[in-house]
Image (tube, rainbow, N blue to C red; front, top):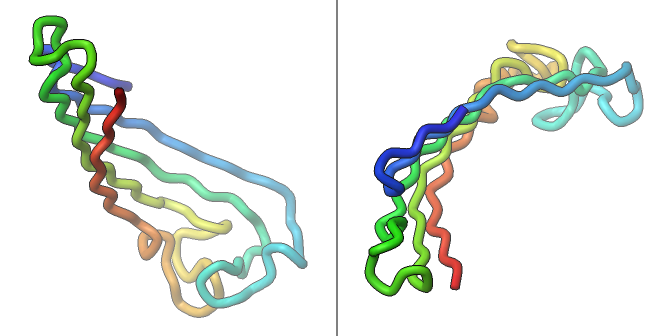
Length: 107
């Protein structure tokens, strides 16, 4: 789902999920990247807000000045098969949540 206002402000959101079979070698219990359930099952959401200051057709130096600034948040509701204590060492899926600030330039 995405919404853009006035070719300048944007808000995007989405849900993701991945799953797979039990794999005792690749997904063995291990701190941080392991899985106590031995499954790759993960899910969560991504929300992104963007600002494109030169997004309009009549903007300064259009169409050559292309800049987008954004902030993206990824939240995990499940990671490597579990919501809580997914690695057998006490880490929760939400411990992998990330905040990403970016500047995008194209010419």
